[in-house]
Image 1 (cartoon, rainbow, N blue to C red):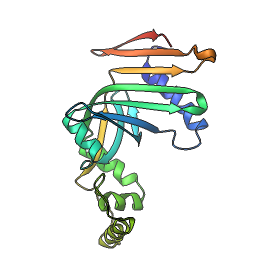
Image 2: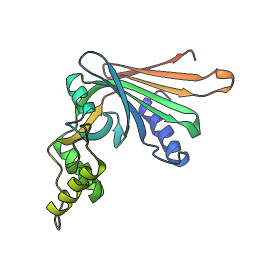
Image 3: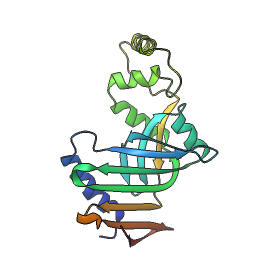
Image 4: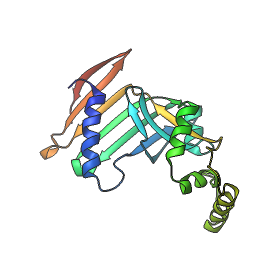
Amino acid sequence: MTDPFALFDEWYAQARQSEINDSNAMALATADERGRPSARMVLLKGHGPDGFVFYTNFEGRKAGELLDNPHAALLFHWKSLRRQVRIEGPVGRVDEAAADAYFATRSRDSQLGAWASDQSQPLESREVFMARYAKMRARFEGRPVPRPPHWSGFRVKPQRIEFWQDREHRLHERRLFTRHGDEWHEGMLYP
Protein backbone atom coordinates (compact mmCIF):
# COMPACT_ATOMS: atom_id res chain seq x y z
CA MET A 1 0.00 0.00 0.00
CA THR A 2 1.57 3.32 -1.03
CA ASP A 3 -1.22 5.65 0.13
CA PRO A 4 -0.40 6.81 3.67
CA PHE A 5 -3.97 7.95 4.29
CA ALA A 6 -5.44 4.57 3.38
CA LEU A 7 -2.90 2.89 5.67
CA PHE A 8 -3.73 5.36 8.46
CA ASP A 9 -7.45 4.64 7.98
CA GLU A 10 -6.78 0.90 8.30
CA TRP A 11 -4.65 1.25 11.43
CA TYR A 12 -7.03 3.79 12.99
CA ALA A 13 -10.03 1.49 12.44
CA GLN A 14 -8.15 -1.30 14.20
CA ALA A 15 -7.18 1.04 17.05
CA ARG A 16 -10.81 2.09 17.51
CA GLN A 17 -11.62 -1.58 18.12
CA SER A 18 -8.68 -2.40 20.41
CA GLU A 19 -7.92 0.70 22.46
CA ILE A 20 -9.86 0.87 25.71
CA ASN A 21 -9.96 4.68 25.90
CA ASP A 22 -9.39 7.51 23.44
CA SER A 23 -8.10 5.77 20.34
CA ASN A 24 -8.10 9.27 18.83
CA ALA A 25 -5.63 10.62 21.43
CA MET A 26 -2.44 12.00 19.93
CA ALA A 27 0.56 13.79 21.33
CA LEU A 28 0.93 17.24 19.80
CA ALA A 29 4.41 18.78 19.82
CA THR A 30 4.90 22.49 19.20
CA ALA A 31 7.75 24.91 19.72
CA ASP A 32 7.77 28.48 20.97
CA GLU A 33 9.42 31.43 19.21
CA ARG A 34 12.80 30.40 20.66
CA GLY A 35 12.48 26.81 19.49
CA ARG A 36 11.74 25.35 22.93
CA PRO A 37 9.50 22.29 22.50
CA SER A 38 6.27 21.53 24.30
CA ALA A 39 4.06 18.44 24.05
CA ARG A 40 0.57 17.54 25.25
CA MET A 41 -2.26 15.15 24.37
CA VAL A 42 -5.13 16.33 22.17
CA LEU A 43 -7.93 14.46 20.40
CA LEU A 44 -8.11 13.90 16.66
CA LYS A 45 -11.46 15.19 15.39
CA GLY A 46 -11.04 14.77 11.64
CA HIS A 47 -8.52 13.45 9.17
CA GLY A 48 -7.95 12.82 5.49
CA PRO A 49 -5.64 13.83 2.65
CA ASP A 50 -6.09 17.49 3.59
CA GLY A 51 -4.71 16.88 7.09
CA PHE A 52 -5.34 15.98 10.72
CA VAL A 53 -7.68 18.23 12.74
CA PHE A 54 -8.00 19.07 16.43
CA TYR A 55 -9.76 21.90 18.29
CA THR A 56 -8.67 24.14 21.13
CA ASN A 57 -8.93 27.47 22.91
CA PHE A 58 -6.92 29.95 20.84
CA GLU A 59 -5.88 31.90 23.94
CA GLY A 60 -3.91 28.95 25.39
CA ARG A 61 -0.24 28.09 25.06
CA LYS A 62 -0.55 25.52 22.27
CA ALA A 63 -2.49 27.86 20.02
CA GLY A 64 -0.09 30.70 20.72
CA GLU A 65 2.86 28.53 19.78
CA LEU A 66 1.16 27.30 16.62
CA LEU A 67 0.20 30.80 15.55
CA ASP A 68 3.79 32.00 16.10
CA ASN A 69 5.43 28.90 14.61
CA PRO A 70 2.91 27.07 12.37
CA HIS A 71 4.60 23.66 12.33
CA ALA A 72 3.80 20.65 14.47
CA ALA A 73 4.40 16.99 15.06
CA LEU A 74 1.73 14.47 16.04
CA LEU A 75 2.18 11.03 17.57
CA PHE A 76 -0.42 8.30 17.87
CA HIS A 77 0.61 5.44 20.17
CA TRP A 78 -1.70 2.44 20.15
CA LYS A 79 -0.20 0.23 22.81
CA SER A 80 -2.72 -2.58 22.33
CA LEU A 81 -1.62 -2.91 18.69
CA ARG A 82 2.06 -2.20 19.41
CA ARG A 83 1.99 0.51 16.76
CA GLN A 84 2.61 4.19 16.46
CA VAL A 85 2.18 6.79 13.74
CA ARG A 86 4.29 9.97 13.59
CA ILE A 87 3.12 12.94 11.51
CA GLU A 88 4.97 16.20 10.82
CA GLY A 89 3.94 19.23 8.81
CA PRO A 90 2.75 22.81 8.61
CA VAL A 91 -0.34 23.92 10.51
CA GLY A 92 -3.26 26.14 9.52
CA ARG A 93 -6.59 27.12 11.01
CA VAL A 94 -9.76 25.31 10.03
CA ASP A 95 -12.41 27.52 8.46
CA GLU A 96 -15.13 29.08 10.60
CA ALA A 97 -17.88 26.81 9.20
CA ALA A 98 -15.93 23.66 10.14
CA ALA A 99 -15.25 25.02 13.65
CA ASP A 100 -18.93 25.92 14.10
CA ALA A 101 -20.06 22.50 12.85
CA TYR A 102 -17.73 20.60 15.16
CA PHE A 103 -18.54 22.82 18.18
CA ALA A 104 -22.25 22.06 17.67
CA THR A 105 -21.52 18.31 18.08
CA ARG A 106 -19.91 18.73 21.51
CA SER A 107 -21.88 18.06 24.65
CA ARG A 108 -23.53 21.11 26.16
CA ASP A 109 -21.26 20.83 29.23
CA SER A 110 -18.18 20.85 26.98
CA GLN A 111 -19.54 23.86 25.11
CA LEU A 112 -20.08 25.71 28.38
CA GLY A 113 -16.61 24.70 29.56
CA ALA A 114 -15.10 26.32 26.46
CA TRP A 115 -16.67 29.62 27.53
CA ALA A 116 -15.68 29.24 31.19
CA SER A 117 -12.02 28.30 30.73
CA ASP A 118 -9.07 30.66 30.36
CA GLN A 119 -7.04 27.71 29.11
CA SER A 120 -3.45 27.47 30.35
CA GLN A 121 -3.78 30.57 32.56
CA PRO A 122 -3.14 30.33 36.32
CA LEU A 123 -6.22 29.24 38.30
CA GLU A 124 -6.66 30.16 41.95
CA SER A 125 -8.83 27.15 42.77
CA ARG A 126 -11.16 24.59 41.22
CA GLU A 127 -14.04 26.43 42.88
CA VAL A 128 -13.29 29.56 40.84
CA PHE A 129 -13.50 27.58 37.61
CA MET A 130 -16.71 25.81 38.65
CA ALA A 131 -18.27 29.19 39.57
CA ARG A 132 -17.40 30.50 36.09
CA TYR A 133 -18.92 27.35 34.60
CA ALA A 134 -22.14 27.90 36.61
CA LYS A 135 -22.23 31.51 35.37
CA MET A 136 -22.00 30.34 31.75
CA ARG A 137 -24.69 27.75 32.39
CA ALA A 138 -27.02 30.50 33.61
CA ARG A 139 -26.03 32.83 30.76
CA PHE A 140 -27.00 30.32 28.07
CA GLU A 141 -29.95 28.73 29.88
CA GLY A 142 -32.68 27.73 27.42
CA ARG A 143 -30.77 28.52 24.27
CA PRO A 144 -28.01 27.05 22.11
CA VAL A 145 -24.41 27.68 23.13
CA PRO A 146 -22.55 29.45 20.30
CA ARG A 147 -18.89 28.78 19.61
CA PRO A 148 -16.73 31.25 21.54
CA PRO A 149 -14.72 33.61 19.31
CA HIS A 150 -11.50 32.35 20.95
CA TRP A 151 -12.19 28.68 20.18
CA SER A 152 -11.45 26.98 16.86
CA GLY A 153 -9.38 24.28 15.23
CA PHE A 154 -6.08 23.56 13.58
CA ARG A 155 -5.24 21.27 10.68
CA VAL A 156 -1.79 19.67 10.43
CA LYS A 157 -1.02 19.09 6.75
CA PRO A 158 1.48 16.23 6.75
CA GLN A 159 4.77 16.34 4.94
CA ARG A 160 6.05 13.17 6.66
CA ILE A 161 4.12 10.20 8.01
CA GLU A 162 5.92 7.30 9.65
CA PHE A 163 4.23 4.01 10.52
CA TRP A 164 6.05 2.04 13.23
CA GLN A 165 5.17 -1.59 13.97
CA ASP A 166 6.72 -3.44 16.90
CA ARG A 167 8.52 -6.66 16.04
CA GLU A 168 10.28 -9.25 18.18
CA HIS A 169 13.83 -8.60 19.35
CA ARG A 170 13.45 -4.87 18.55
CA LEU A 171 13.56 -5.67 14.81
CA HIS A 172 10.77 -3.14 14.28
CA GLU A 173 9.26 -2.20 10.94
CA ARG A 174 9.29 1.49 10.01
CA ARG A 175 7.60 2.77 6.85
CA LEU A 176 8.15 6.41 5.96
CA PHE A 177 6.01 8.43 3.56
CA THR A 178 7.27 11.85 2.48
CA ARG A 179 5.39 14.41 0.43
CA HIS A 180 7.09 15.98 -2.58
CA GLY A 181 4.68 18.51 -4.05
CA ASP A 182 1.42 16.61 -4.46
CA GLU A 183 3.06 13.17 -4.56
CA TRP A 184 3.90 10.78 -1.77
CA HIS A 185 7.07 8.69 -1.80
CA GLU A 186 7.46 5.60 0.37
CA GLY A 187 10.61 4.24 1.94
CA MET A 188 11.77 2.26 4.93
CA LEU A 189 13.86 3.22 7.96
CA TYR A 190 16.14 1.05 10.07
CA PRO A 191 14.62 0.25 13.46
